[in-house]
Image (tube, rainbow, N blue to C red; front, top):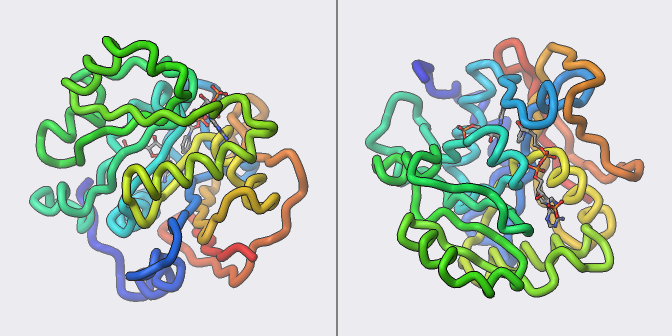
Length: 259
Ligand SMILES: NC(=O)C1=CN([C@@H]2O[C@H](COP(=O)(O)OP(=O)(O)OC[C@H]3O[C@@H](n4cnc5c(N)ncnc54)[C@H](OP(=O)(O)O)[C@@H]3O)[C@@H](O)[C@H]2O)C=CC1
Ligand SMILES: Nc1nc(O)c(N)c(N[C@@H]2O[C@H](COP(=O)(O)O)[C@@H](O)[C@H]2O)n1
């Protein structure tokens, strides 16, 4: 990324929505980039660049302010993400320090993570954090060999009892947030997606099963069409508050709290 750091006006636009220095519970930011038709990729399994350089830099700035970053298994498989931070841009010396702990929500314990996975390559190169954390269902404790192999690669498996058999997917978010806070000791997490994760977390926040403190959405001036992976929670939701919008290059970014 050969980009300039964000201007002071962008930093002050974001400031109020970042995790504060001290916060009693896990501070959760939900953030992603969407098209004008609320799609976050061209189709299932497809990595799609929506953010322009300025808003992508903004995302890296957000990453530098969170202890952990979480994506779902679908995103891990589609995107092979690095999940590290490079802010200020081009300052690789700072990358390890500013990077959040990468977390992948993989209840089915099915993703293939290898030394060649970007998240582990980054950690091995000192530009991303170890361990990579997998959050899974506790029945997979019955696979100690797989867990040991993952440990050798730098992957820590955290399991949650009955993660997939909660009465609703909204309920499982409470368990996930408790696990991040108490097992990983992180004070803030940035949830980046994908669509299943975003839709469930929005619903969980609406149902008060989970807390979302900030919502930061980049809107890119493109339509991805009907085949795209869509963010659309199962119910109408209207709890965003203190909402502001600002242009970042060709994109617009919305920052918001949640009532
Ligand atoms: N533009 C952007 O900013 C971003 C775009 N993306 C795109 O999104 C797409 C991937 O999205 P999608 O396919 O929806 O996959 P997700 O990344 O949302 O991952 C889905 C996985 O997460 C698990 N999961 C989700 N919610 C819960 C919950 N409440 N409790 C337990 N497990 C949960 C699912 O479990 P189960 O297996 O039980 O269903 C499934 O394994 C890709 O194309 C990617 O490129 C991703 C991130 C950001
Ligand atoms: N902010 C943003 N804009 C886009 O256009 C995107 N496609 C994404 N995707 C998210 O970023 C991850 C990939 O980037 P890294 O390799 O981790 O730097 C991807 O997995 C999504 O979480 N985000």
